[in-house]
Length: 526
Image (cartoon, rainbow, N blue to C red; front, side):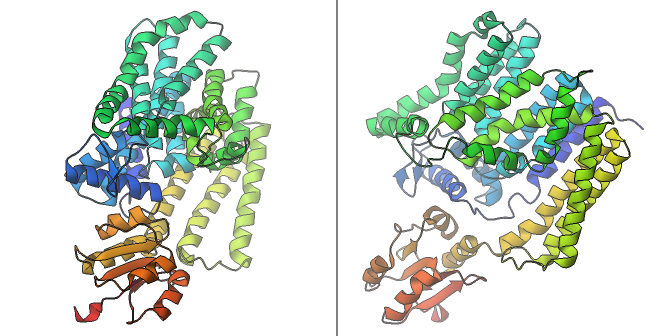
């Protein structure tokens, strides 16, 4: 029985919701940025001030407030938890996958669209960033939506205004979600593509003047009100954060120009292994897929743009993944039996043999996070994927190879989520420590830490955290008559526990004995 297009698209949406939503709130906010965005949204909602975001009581104006608003809305409806913090970016992941489906389907048909959407949703960055509370997903959604609308409108000769209006609305979404790259990246992509196609007059049909007004209005309106409330320092802070990162005036993450050359293959994994096949399909002389130039320009613009910037963060490459996923999905749908497919089959056979040999003869590593059984199960799924791929490729069955690869990677990702994430959660020190502190700490008690996890500790303990202290600073405050709780590495606090009188009590220690919570309060006789 063959499903109708509506049926296949419904199944696609269900699969995407499963991939991005499965166990979404089951792991603590282990990244510093996640805790900062969740805590800022919590403070915004509790204070009722939705215009001037604050983090731990201090103004946080480095980014536009869209993600804070979305997380705060989730907290108001679902509760203050990890699921509500990550739900906005998970929805972004689903929507980006559907946009990839739309452009690949227009270029190469229904099957190509389905393949491309699943490819994006199962890349390391597509899946990973879609399951983290981070504004990069909002930027990628805006850029992807704008570029897709531009290309679909261009193919129709810009006969209707709807694609143009949507182009600017998506660009404005990217700007309001992360920063000016949300407008710059789509415009640069459209401009280069039209110049290469020798159609520069089409730029005039983009209504750049009126479009910029549409895209800039939310940020300008919010920024103007914020300046009136918080003063001119707010504007300088935001300009330094956005322009300064690109120009290098603020060196947060300086990296060499080739930095993203090693990040992009990892970001596209595991589909990086299929890139030789993708190149072979697009380079063949007979019946090459359409849209190759457009997808190449789309992927190259963010890669070059962020490579030329002084400050570089790996997550910036998320905007380059949608075109690569579309190209991979299209190539899988247009595979034919031939030399490239056979070579891929032999490579997969070698990889499966190497992994099987490693499991059989190499000692299983003792990892503090993942149990050996769960890790071996995930690797076995990967081996089965390689074995099936090798068998179908060497047998000259391109359609079966493509479908099996899609199904195998989905199973690999779902198995990893189901087996490895719960294990990671069991060793999440910050969440368990903060929850433990929350049980005992009072409103007047002092909570401090020695490290850079202040926002995460504040989030889970739901208590104000004093600024990061050195061991010497902590030693000075133990004479305070208030009850004091301190979180930090055992090696940092061991000397303090020996020197302080009266004695200190250990409230909590993580299973790996790396972190500890100490207090001058005998909680056993509370």
